[in-house]
Length: 319
Image 1 (tube, rainbow, N blue to C red):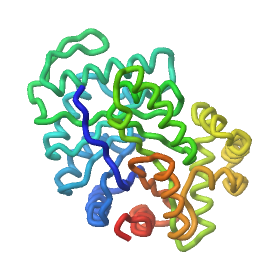
Image 2: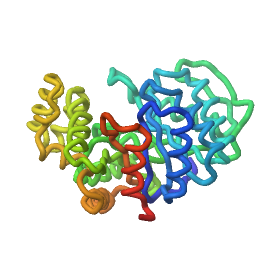
Image 3: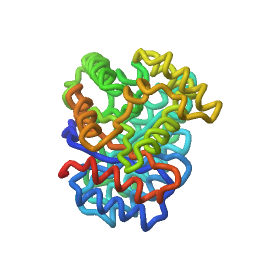
Image 4: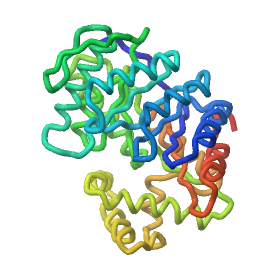
């Protein structure tokens, strides 16, 4: 596997159901603010690879990441064809981020097999899907897109070190980033790879808003929702935030975001005035993140695009 250069700097993520004009506008503004990349998670509002194909025509240098695509959502053949399409249209700017989807038995083995299949397909070689179906891409990209994988637990982190060009972390503390680097290095060593070849990216929820209380409640609601998911509850417990996560999950069930513990939010987000939020982002970088991804949390009652833009402008690399 040929090494792909690590991606460094500051990126941003857009999750909410923006109208196309607003989504494209935020992408263009993000590029003008010197963000390195834009990531889109696939959460039910748009087909991410179709959207990134469109955004490729709106931007010139911005890297375009799927962050992440759950494998059950597409057949492996369609994933290869769609990934190659974005890579061609963007002149080689795709970061293909993948995740297992539901944490079921054999999910990581399926992810490993899919990554191997995609590497062969993007190289123009005959490929075989994890289900045993042979195929070959008719349109092979001039250069393969880097393949990143999402990781919560240590097994996924070690798998990233063994097979991926990058790993994408989510809802974690800076200390968790440092731990992920150690796990990644172990997986790379087992595979005979240099861990320095693997980019460590981390989503950091952030909200800078004129109404500090509204910003706090928005981030609290988002964190509480994730604390209610078993996989994330386990991750929070590994980080020593189990008690806070339990209280946050209870707050989510009761629809009372104000009950989410302050220490829990401060542990996993960048919030406050711009200086404080910027300082928090730098803590992630100091802990070992190559690419810090600003993930704006939209304040309810605000215009989606305006709320996100306020945070992106406040935390821009060139600010």
